[in-house]
Length: 379
Image 1 (cartoon, rainbow, N blue to C red):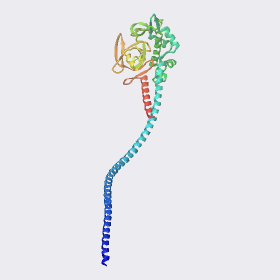
Image 2 (cartoon, rainbow, N blue to C red; image 1 turned 135 degrees about the horizontal axis):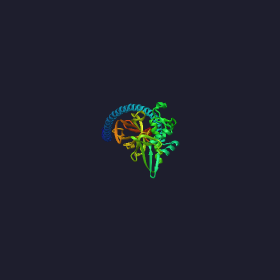
Image 3 (spheres, one colour; image 1 turned 135 degrees about the vertical axis):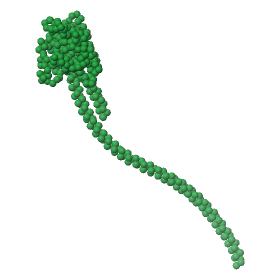
Image 4 (cartoon, one colour; image 1 turned 30 degrees about the vertical axis):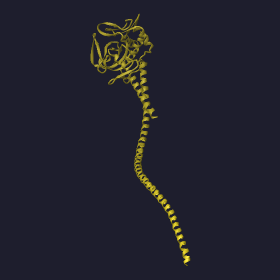
């Protein structure tokens, strides 16, 4: 037994040593894995904490973005409502624009009608500024004009002789003719064998224009007559017809261009009572536009139904006044004034300022251009 113990004890000791060594080695191995695990744990914990930090930061950003989104959504809904309102107003504006466009086209069409009427009136005055009657021309040539070398004299009272004695024209008021107070053409005047003061004036102006053309190239003198205490004024070249108690009166040199002027004037058909009447104003220059009307200042006035010299026009504070010629002197007449002027190409009316067909036509053209510009922008 002792012999076995002596052998067993060393063996057991060796086994114990081996076990201890084994467990030591095993412990060493386990201890190394633990350290690795601890290291991994710490790394994971760091990453976790980092992720938690990122999550918290992202959560904050998310909350901010959510607030911004909510604000933007509110603004979006407000913009949607504003858009709906603007769209409604836009559609209303489109309807109004369409309506205005229709009205503009209608106005343009109506304006064009007025333009045609005004142009027709302008053409009418131009047409009736010339004389077409061959019989009147023949009488004027033989009786009312005298020509010498370099000079040509037109006797205005002779025109009354031709019109009344040879053509049988007489004064007829509108009631007699059964018409309203308006101008009639020269042809109609001759057909009616007469007319009122404006009709006589229109013919007289055309006759003077004809005689001026006959005198073209010569120095022209125009004579009228004035009353006197004695003597006779012969109306024609043959001295066959005359006015008693009258004498010649030459118009100022150069005042040869005839214009019809109407207003409150002495009317020889109504015992020289002041009333609506038309006479002839001779200007030194042709009146061709609204701006030329000032050239009628001091124009010489002649009664177209007799050829009598009346006086002169004088530019007043508003329109033209009249100064009547009496025994060599001019006397202003407070009740006389001019409110209408008819030239060879236009008709002018005073209504808080002078206006003419040509100026109205130009206004129509300007207005038409403005309408066209607006319509072009609508396209």
